[in-house]
Image (cartoon, rainbow, N blue to C red; front, side, top):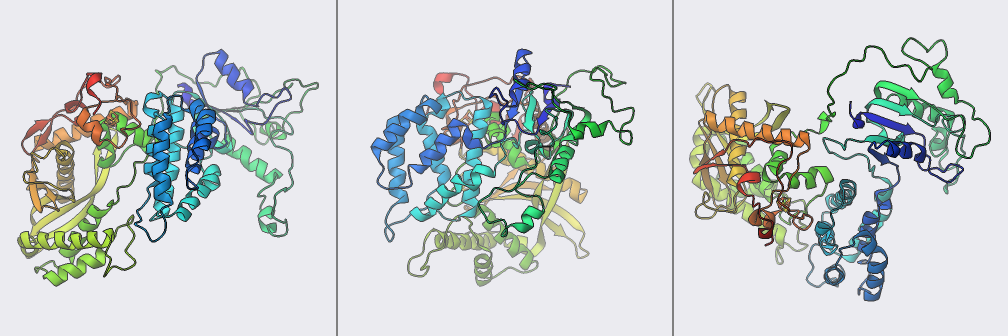
Amino acid sequence: MTYSDFAILMRSTKEQEQDESPRHAAFTRALERRDIRYSLEAGGSPFDRPQVGVLRDTFELLRYSPLNRDRVRKFFNDSILPAYPKADFNSLVSTLTRWVRDIHSPRGGARQRIYPQEILFEILDAFRIRESSFPYDVMRDIGLFSRMIQDIETVYMSVDDSQRFANILNFLKTPAKTGYNISTDDIIRKPNAVTVSTVHQVKGLEFPVVFIVDVEAVRFPGKRKSYGGWLPEAVIKKALGRGAYQGNPIEEARLFYTAMTRAERYLHVSGAQLLPLGKKDRKPSRFANRLLQDEITNDEISSDPSRIPEGLVPCPQKQKIDETVLPTSFSEIRYYLRCPMDYRFRKGYGFTPAIPAMFGFGDTVHTIIQKLHTGFPEEIPTLEDIESTARSAFHLKHVPRSGDPTSRPGPWEEAEDKAVEVAQKYVEEYQKDFQRMRQVEARFEIPARDCVISGSIDLLLKQDSEGNTLEAEVIDFKAMQGGDDPVENEELEWTELALQVQLYAKAAADILGENARTGSVHLLKDNIRQEVPISEEAVAAAIKNVEWAVRGIIEGDYPMRPHPGKCKKCDFKVLCPRIPQPFMIIQDIPPEIHLPDGKMHALAFSEFKEDESEQRD
Ligand code: SF4
């Protein structure tokens, strides 16, 4: 077992002992004395962390126009600098000035959508976060703030006036303050540390060894508490009857049960006889006493703290992996193959990049193409058919429709027209597909070492009159621009595009029981279909790359693999120090990926510059 297999749980970590130390202190100090790493899930809010609290308060500076420079200066010196010592005042003022102008631009004038995530990244840039070398926990909490902002962006289709922005600030003040559990992160390998936590914080988690401590009379179960809230008791009578908002014996028993069932193998329940500055012995908890009563106790329960469970055999230490969060889609794994640090920003810390205005355009065009294939399986749709199919299926989540689409069309209407045009061009060019082929979308699961990759693919099937499949083509539709020669286009990441098609080809073979004849990437904007090698060798190399990346993720090997061109396009360039680093744990290099015009290693190797001085753009 390793440290992360152990948890020390208590009723409250924060309440004070008589000597004014928090209750967790006796345990965390003991761990410190023995040099044992621990993570304290002390409850509370992520805003308790100065770096996160300061971020929210910086957002508050945008509530009113004009920006009060003196107030910003004072806030900068008193709060920002202690939390972000590298922060740049001038850069912050110019960022805030610009956003205040956009947020408070008068109604009726030229309005534009505001992206709170973009504001966050710009503020973090002004705070010079990339030079700050914050430890994992701090980055994770800042990432959590980014996730809260993402929640807002998914609720509000459009943030385009000061009132909406004020709603965001209010949201950050209330539900976001209490509605986030700082212990629930999605990382696969948690830090190798003992968890010290309240029972509430670990609901849903399990540990091989659990110590429930501080189990004494009056502490666990806690004192019966009556309701002291601000709503009249009569109004919430029902909720009070359920035991909400107050401490009652049933609720306490439920909590103790939760604590006990966090243990997978070994459970230790203990309480102190004498508490700090205590004058007389504490009474044992009736919950602890109950465990030793005849009708419950058996050979496996003992009151002898020195007794070691029987049958233990020594074995090498291996850190537990939370399999529920293993990556399962190629879209996640490709970030690791691009740069493991990119994966860490996204999945480890939880940062969410700003949603581009046209986010979802590719998906909606893809849906239109699918609808055309299913709606017209044996005939070529007319231009009118295509237009009505496209307009009825078109949808963009993050762009508002114009209030007057006929005389003042906006970005939504322009994008819709573009989708109609793309669909018409597609049908014109690939008429034969509508006559002889049937398009199906198939879901797949590819088992590989340590993971199962799932997703869905588009297959064009040529069938005989009986419906038997004669041949199949794998097509990956993309809304991106290909240019005159897509293979030479450096904007297209062919290692990622090709690898995806190769995985699809493997999935097609599993679904159809026979190999797909060809695999291609179809660039819808230019209407170009580019073939990709899907030989057995190419597919095997693709699978090996995926397995290699999953191994790196499981092992927690997240080096920065910078390259000026790659970092320039990276979603996290303002957060990342871009220091070239070797892989520390996984030492092998995955095989080259087969591309339309040759072979190349994944971007973590083929786009990597070891010289630090070459990293800035
Ligand atoms: S900025 Fe560069 S080094 Fe940093 S995560 Fe992005 S690609 Fe990797």
